[in-house]
Length: 299
Image 1 (spheres, one colour):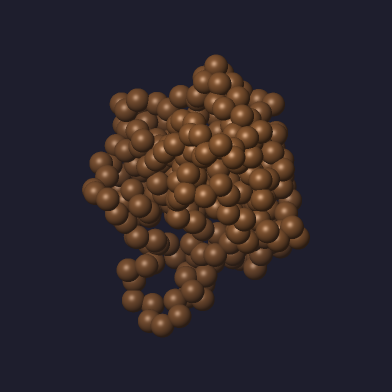
Image 2 (image 1 turned 90 degrees about the horizontal axis):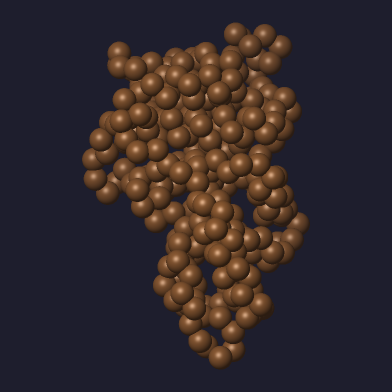
């Protein structure tokens, strides 16, 4: 994931890949070099390579999201213009960064299990699968609430799944019949497999199989182990049971998975995330629009 840079250092940087910068510091806007406070917003810029339409696909998904009541476990977009997307800034960084800072209580991970499965269930309700659930796309806010981000791989449920690197996707084995040797179709099966690996990563601090002796070039061996459903050893706790069920695709829907995760202690003992209220979003959108008018995105 790109490193964060404050907007006041430069008005915009057009890169081949998306750049995301927090604008918690003062943001330069306009030729007068005056400064405007814009808290808790990050800017995602359009790629230079216009043949890569990932940025446009994500913008389209946010347009769809705005037609529905917001999900508190999905990052919110305040304003989208052809050259940029103003997103709620998540100060907690990536899941990997959070795990490296200090030990995470199990109850926090249990809440993350509920939040991540809720996010997937909300997308499922819209008829879509995220198709790229992995640590760089799971960010945390300042209160350690997990938010799902990065929606340029979103695909309608039931369409062929293009797959991802292991252990965030699994090539199906003989148990899948005619789908043997493929990634299958986008839906609850593909999404919960990735969620299981995320939760394993969060509880162990490393990816599935990462600490096993697979010698050199472990990639193909991990693919083979996943395909044969020879998963890492798990414990007897409820969260580990959920991880195992995710890997085996035991939930018929992400809504069912979210319901199971909701009874984990951390899911109901800790405070739940809430969506940003409409007034705050409207006020922040107006600030973003003012920055655009003042030339923030000018080349």
